[in-house]
Length: 542
Image (cartoon, rainbow, N blue to C red; front, side):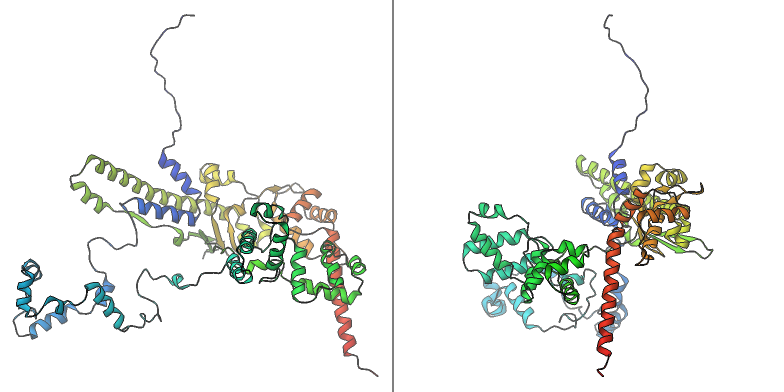
């Protein structure tokens, strides 16, 4: 077969994702906080972008500033007429341009004109004199004394909030008082840096001595001192050690309490009989000891400088409509308002500059226009998806979780004529405020569970809610096993397997039937013992 060269024309179609398209897809899945950060970066980068609530160009003072100005226009005119000079009161004063252009002459000429030396007139540097005058002048307004809200738009109340003390800072302050040697402080600071948010150290500190070049005894001695720091229980390596430190602080760490702390696994299982034998106490004493354990703090470091929780701001509001339906609207506070400054661009276009400057501003105009359109399209897409979700899950908003229907991305995508990936990006990191609480949009997409009688399928979230209701209403003497729950669900028309019930129960952090039986019997026993003790106190001696 001979190899030859030839020209061919081929026509094909392919999807080319431009940078603008890729950025628009990225905007869909951003949360409102991430979107605000992105827009702020674009405002700093692009000179043609401006906030919609910024002051309009032109240098005109706002109405509020004119209203609270020191002099009104009519007052100044009347004052000039009363001066008796046929015009302004400053008619005999030279204009600013005339004064600035006048030559003052040499130093000798100025001193001869003033009839004194310049040192007598300007005895201090201007900056020093201004600073001294500023210190001597007393505050004239209430806000200058720090006792009121400022009228400035940049006033930030959070600037006056004291910084939170972290757990590491709190321990470092005690470390500087507890130790004087440099080696001990170095070991202590190394251990403090290993303390986690809850106040615990890693279980294994074997490499600490090797890394610090110290002996294991030195590390243990410093650790023993650190475990006496505030808050009690800090720098422990396990839960048992944390509780033991707190009990020693309360002078309650006797042999019986030590046996209880060393067998916390039995306490978690509610095996009171085994604990009573190990501690060598009766029922009343073991109940008091368990009560003391419950009053201790298992995470002593959580009250210091924990991570600040970010308030969840909904992107969509759903309210009952006057016609019995539901009104869906976007939260305008989460939508960045940006505009393209066309006036500034037209002024720049009239000026002659370099070719690079012209292309830069042309690209800036295109990017700004694209961003405004992308933000508008993002808002419309979120509203469209949220409206369809409300239409599909009308039973949930009207009657509750038990009426949540099975729903997938494809059903919503087909209804609004969009791709499933677009719906998936829109529902990511977005929240909806309803009459039943605030939920993530993905909450309304649940798997379906077949019906036992061949009817309409049930939502997995509704089934989980049904399981929780059955367990919450069970009696202490008749604890429901997973098999019993399966039978009751099938009687309700839900075809579900036992392993699915166990998976849903564990996902909701509900213990097994054996553990629930122990917990409820123990709680019932505590109630009965308390009632008997109260009754015995009320009985008067004969």
